[in-house]
Amino acid sequence: LKSCGVRDSFSGEDFLSLLSSLSGKLQGGSCNSKQLDLAIFVARNLSRIPADEFNLLDKSQLFLPARDGKMFQARDMTFDDAPWLSAIVKKTRHVFVHPDVGNEVARILGSKSLRDVLSANQNGMVKIPCPKHEALHQLLSHKTLTNLECSRIVLELLEIAEMKGTKQVSILLDRRKK
Image 1 (tube, one colour):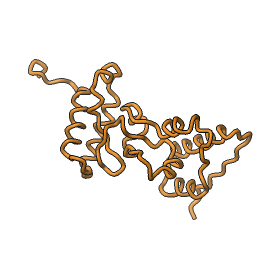
Image 2 (cartoon, one colour):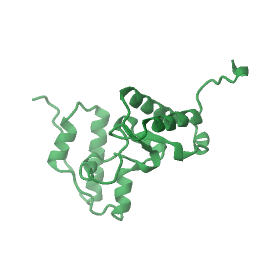
Image 3 (cartoon, rainbow, N blue to C red):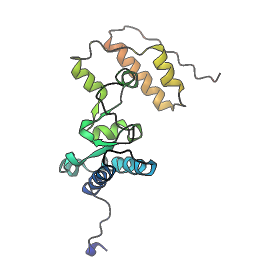
Image 4 (cartoon, rainbow, N blue to C red):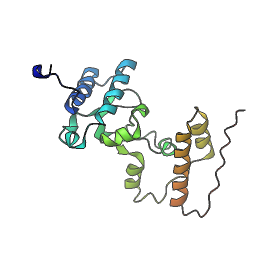
């Protein structure tokens, strides 16, 4: 089969073509559930190709699904690595990457971190807002969180406390069912 041009695996160019083709087919419309699953699957696989191959790709053809299922160029999108901040900036020009793509995949594929974007806009994030009780309650109670997700949230809270110059932090997370 190799003599007929059949390869062992897809190339980065194949993944890129698929995402670009899907975006063109949708013409600004939203993906249906199967298209969304396909776009997420392809994006995850594209993020795993070797860096030297990825660097040769035309990034202007790299599209990712947004929260609303529409496809946008990855470089024009923002991934939500600070959920308490995204709640504040919902009515802005940010186009957020669909959460199922994942922050690390979105970063590798060229999307910007919400923290980095806000930091650049606020000259070092000197006035970073601390999440309010309601925002934390919503974040922690709207779904069943894995231990990894809970750990990430606690680490992010500690990072905010450190940036605010806090000397001591006490965090109590009651995971008992009511």
